[in-house]
Amino acid sequence: MGLLVGLPLKLFHLLFVILRLLWPLLLIAVIWWLVRRRQGRPQGGGTASGAKEPEFKGPVYTVDYEEVDEEKKDGQ
Image (cartoon, rainbow, N blue to C red; front, side):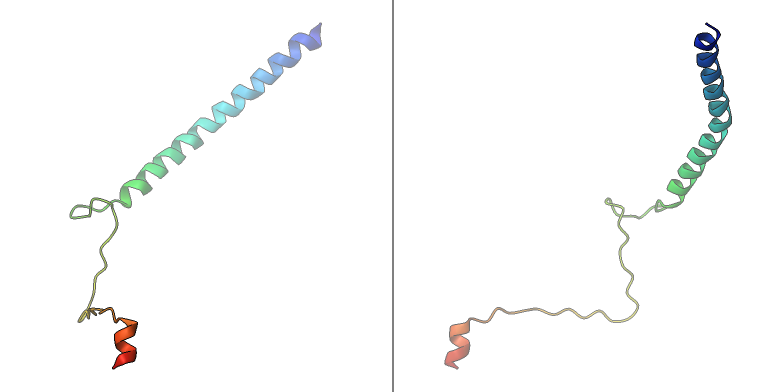
């Protein structure tokens, strides 16, 4: 009879000791995650999707492509 009562009580005691030691670590992890998440946000002027726009230093060249018909190309 002692094993039937003592074993579950010992398991509950072990579970509560683990939880008592673990909650400060979980609290620190959640605070750390929130701080890291807050630092990653743009401070204003960001796009709606959150993607950063590239910054170009110097001239930017664009190219306009023109579709060429293969039949006209062979006939010239």
